[in-house]
Image (tube, rainbow, N blue to C red):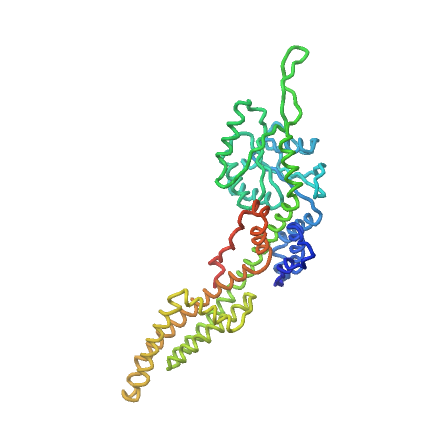
Length: 449
């Protein structure tokens, strides 16, 4: 199990020592988190791909190598747009749509302040695959790119809107590019841009950047015929917007993508570990339920029933806390039990009331045994069985609630997710790209014992 990292240490610096910028803080803390990540052999095998991807992203963060990917439908001119940015035909283009079949990358020779290198990545079209495949492709592109250019060549389609939603859900920084703007008369271009803005998903503020990556112009030939010929690309607005963004926030975008990769691995690893402990937790809760039921059924005194039940539940919580890697003291375990009982009527007054009534009846029946010649002991047995059944149910319910609370505590442990949430609260630039921060993942019922 990974050791907790003292993330707050980097905030408590001497007054004469300046706090590092957000990208540097991310780099330092993520490098340390990765170095202190302790995995079993089975975990290393199960998460080999995710670990390799994270290590590549950490290396790119260390080397300040940022990746910009284009995304969009087949035939919107993604490859032509990248070639125009590069100033050379590095990516294949063809009049037959669907020329790009897999991701390809090329270095952008443009110097960008704060970054050592920028890679431009071409991706396959998204409209020739099923919806589930589009979602997987969007997720893969989002994981591998620090910035995504969504390229369209007309009004926003349902497929493109779906892609925007998938990319935005991943917290991926986006630029929206309208290619082939030369195909639209000047009088129609502004209404088209206004229509695109209206069709954007709610809450997604993107300004379409109109470009023409491979325009053509009419040319009069010597024989008097008019033919279209290639013209110089018109991508100055995109180049300017891209340079401004990368020079101002390129390092931050690179750091945030690395943080997202680390958070994904952390969540996958936690789910794996919690899922693997589910069976152990079930066995543990079952053992304590039997133990508590036996004690309640056999003990004739109500006070001892209640005291023994509390002691049994406390021991169960302590064992569960050890199982989930969140050790706590006996006092903390009792406080957790009190809090859970206060929020659950069955575990609180209702259960105690029923146990008190059953215990009182059993005590009276046992006490009356000498006067009835032992006849009163006969109805005491069903009462004891009812007490045992209630104890089993209460212990199992308490165990599930305690496990859920411990799982939520495990998800709040210091790590990439905690760092992301803190940065989103303290840094306006981070908030711009990540919003207010995603809420902690809910505990899945499949992980509960």
